[in-house]
Amino acid sequence: MKPMKKVSAFLVVVSHVIAQQDLSIYGFFDYYTIPMNTREVGYVYAKCMEGLQFKSCYSNPPKDSFSLDQNLPYYNLLGTQAGGTLGTFYCLKCCGTPPSNIDYWNLSCPVNYATILTTNVYGYELRLATYKYAGDKGYVRCPLKRSACTYNGKETIECNKAMDKEGTYLIGYTATIEVAQYDDYFKYWRGALSCSIQSVERNYSLVSGEIFHENYVLIHTPNFNYSYFGYDKIAILIVFLYVVVYVTLYFCRRKHCVYCAKKLVFSMELCYMCKFYGVQPPDPVLMKALEEKTEQLQGKIPERFPGSTITLYILRKLGVCIAKFGNCCCLCGCCRSDGCCCCCCRLCSRRKHNENPYKIHPGEGEDGSEYREEEKNAMKEKEMETDEGSTSKSKKKKKKKVKINPNILYYPPHIIYAAVNHPNPPDKSIPAPKRPDSESDVVPFSYP
Image (cartoon, rainbow, N blue to C red; front, side, top):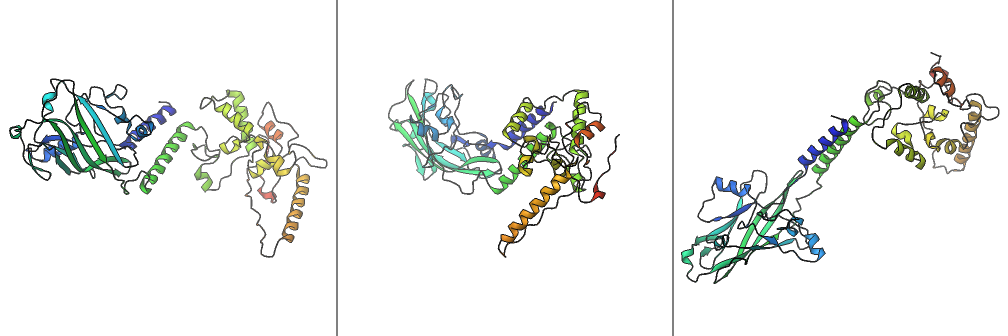
């Protein structure tokens, strides 16, 4: 499998594991005479609330765009072909984002000759899962009250069709449910705290084509313990992003340590182990000469990503330091000794030295040491004048110590290119890097 396919498969698997948000409210209608044993509780937690199980229900959302944006998209498209719920049982979900923290579901369910018989029910009660935590077995109950039945609060004393002497018919109901929102790391779900139902009756039956109304009022008071961005989630997210970036760079990056040849993930030149032991990278000009020679002998390495070559070209034109991405292309002496400083972007030398580093000045040696010595003395005099004019409380800035790289070859680039038998050496006018104060730190160079 190619590296990009491996990374894509990894991201797909992780996204499915992390993104688990359950908006459903679990429960169903059942007869009050059926006891709430372990099996019934299991049914409550296994089934999304579907009302009286009509497949013909559709929503009646408000027409203004402001209210539509506050509703759940599932409710706005309920019972439509676009929502994918046409001719199926609906699932009660919560919650939208209304300012009042109350969602209103107004469902219209056309009935036919087969479903009319299921509308006029007696002795039903709504059983909803509290679902406060994973493995919870709690539930709440509220009766679908009929005028002919006897109740004691939320307990049904007696209710059957024989008690209805006036011949009433159920044509709809309004259920008010208080909903709580819970979370556990990156898993989010809903649970019911309480419920009540107000039934709508009349003294004659529904006929085919009429509407049975199922309305819900979902009250979801904000829970301050419910958070998408807790400290634990932020820590897990940081670790997840680190793993994603690490895997992506590991499989997609071609850079290797210039000393031990181990694959680099985050470092630019040296791996962390080499840095720990204080290893210094080879001379950048020597590395560049070998890379160019290899490219001419073996051909140009294909792009790792489509368009990467043109992207680097545009970044150079915009003045972005490509050296930070491990592609320094400068040959000047200052960058070889002090580290690359955007010479490949044509910014370093003119700003740092106010001169063209590739220009040989009168009286300057082959390595440019005489000219740089004069410039160094001039900068010291300027610093002394600044220090004398400062107040007594001011402190002199300590000069930053630059660690000498013993692997630097203190010769002009054209000599190094000639030493590796490069067919196209650079211009001889490019000077050698400045030698360090201690000659013992210089690594002797000889032609191979």
